Image (cartoon, rainbow, N blue to C red; front, top):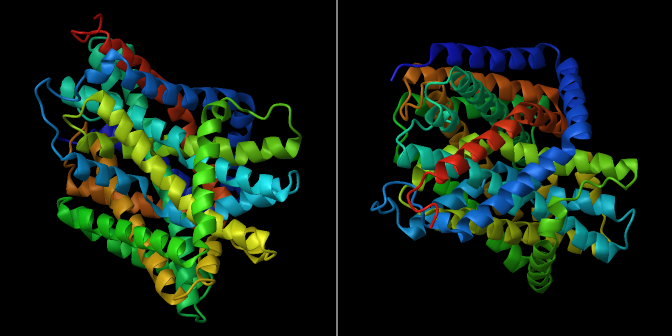
Length: 498
């Protein structure tokens, strides 16, 4: 299948222009992105929260309704993967450099903010509940909704695996549908590119910090960050010139095993009893607040709380939307033959439960340290957020081993994510071709490197988060359109009126 040269050239131009702008004049690019995002959040924050909460409720309703029996494929089609293998791959999709980066930093940040307004025990509980809200059901409902729409139209109606497919499939003769579909694919590409580039920046910051701890050298700082970025670029480019096969799957599984090892190590060698109590308590608090929190916009709070809500909760919600097309295509590819009911339950429950355990363990041990009177982790979070996970590991036995495992896991997650993203971007810009041309994949690999490098030059995690939010804002409306088209298509199912 030939590339859609108009779409490819326009999207490459946009991504390249953003990257060059950020490289040449980082300050103005950061200022522009943060100003646009702040204005959008102030005026449309309610719409973002209403949308993501509606997606969660929609997914749950769909699983429990008669539509839950609809199969993502032919009526007699069986799943391509066993349930265990499928869940394992969902687990892998739920992992990433973000979990490694924010494992301790996010609960510590929320705790530091909350303890200025609440008693310490309440602040600790609120910090973990908030973190789980950001990484739990709402995030995975976004992924599930986008993936379900793509899988339904691809496997049940035979359309290309594109976000434009619902509109162009339902209205094949309408010019407005063709234009809308092109715009949807364009903004999907922009959201993926900016979201993945942001993860590159976060991963490089964390890997460089870990290397600096393991091998202290004069190269520390900007030079070390540049060296890590160059090595990462050299590692992810070669796979783009070959078929995406078992090699990337093995690398992803290796990263997942390293993350599992870290989780088990922290629970066993940390304050185990405290951590298990924390995990269970956080689980209950989160489930009791998940729906009400989805409608909370902190309207009646002071300006500092409103700012915190915009910088964290709203940013996270659009962050997941930015990754939605990328993760959605991955989940859709492995879910052929599943019913909507088992699809929703698997996608929502498995990654959310893992996130609860992950943050309960890492965040719990950080809060345990603070409650015992040690404020070092809080101070490190404020001064050097990418180092805080390593600071926590340094308090446990075999710190050199766990630090090495964290560095390797972060590196592997970034490499596999960038390679997969380049393939997905190639697919979107080639009319849905699952195996896009090598030159197209290579161009996207280079563009992701340019944009990731630009975000690294910004030198700030908050700036990176602003860039990601900027790229995702238009896709909020596209996600709503996809779901509306999906509901219309479901009404045409043979058993829709039973």
